[in-house]
Length: 133
View 1: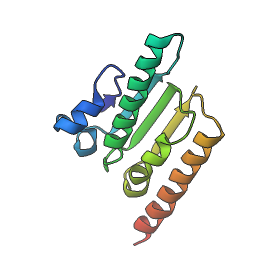
View 2: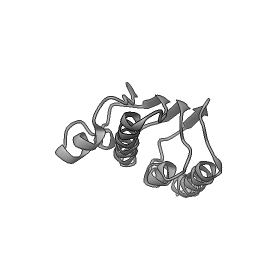
View 3: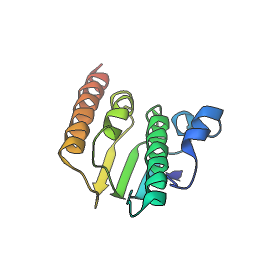
View 4: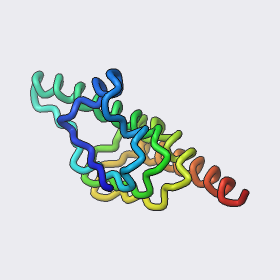
């Protein structure tokens, strides 16, 4: 089964109220996160951006608990300013089922790149140890 991040869905509210949680889902094997940008043109957009970033972080936090996703696709997203990948540390470190990570057409600054490489390094070490036992 395939899942997709929906920017309009209130992930923070869902995590707090216990509705469908991606972290506990046992059916989704591929998760796609596509088209997540946070542009600010005026004050109203600034409020929307704050909500969108909090919502995206809430989705990441929910995803971090998943141990069964085999393929994570992140496409056309703003992944700058780090912090998001560090939130996913548990996902990469504890999910021995992850076989493929696709990151394409994304904005990824130095901080985000470092966070991603740190998260993957820990996950690869743990998964290698798990597979050798």
